[in-house]
Image (cartoon, rainbow, N blue to C red; front, top):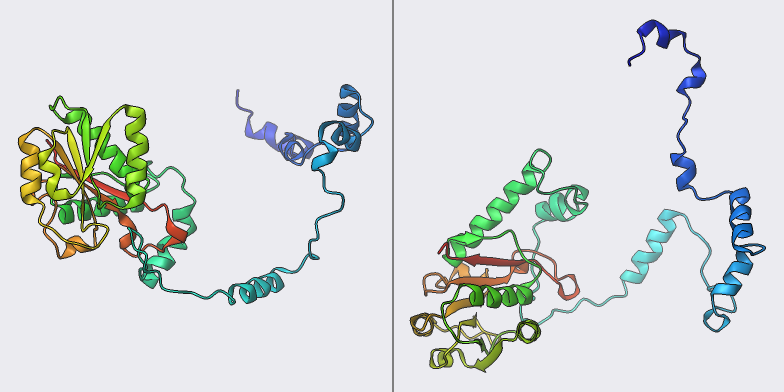
Length: 298
């Protein structure tokens, strides 16, 4: 029932006061409420409760040696002085993680934009049209570079994408084999994750050089292109030999390299995967970084 405008105008101002307990509830209990709770559980105060529940052996005997509080600008100056002591060196380890240059416009409008890194519901179209457009462009770029038909909007990292490719190969392959071939020249972190996933799925792993893959009866294979040593090999014949026996072939690759190299799709691969970090994403202390994953529509 809706009150009439006249009734609202004649109502006392007290009715407009804040009457819910939201603020109070989220500020925590007051002294009287603390006393009531302590009485209910049979302790004199909170200190006695802590004495009874936290073993003395794990308690600090004195307060933490914290510095006095400082104004924000002073604290920032102090942090900058500490950070200035860092020596930035060029990483040559590689293995899927490479130093990149992030264009200032991307850094400013995406990586430093709270609208992107404090996600609401990225799949809610009426709110996230810009994000959806960016993801669509990303997926189209992956499709173009890998030479395949479909691409998703990313996975956790390259290693878990490789593990997903293995399980996808098992589900879609008509081979009766329970073995999966892994290129020994894949990145070591990828091999470790694939080993773990294979163990719990009960798959047998076969390791070897990429050129040897077609010599094994397997339901699928994971090849690295370029491999962990930076070697570039045309995998077309190997992929054809694997597919002739009904195996599904996944190629872990480098998006930036595919700007110049023959695409996995052109060589006959069924799945292409790798890290998206190559396109201007900061190293982030080694990841994880979003993976790309593309496949044939069939």
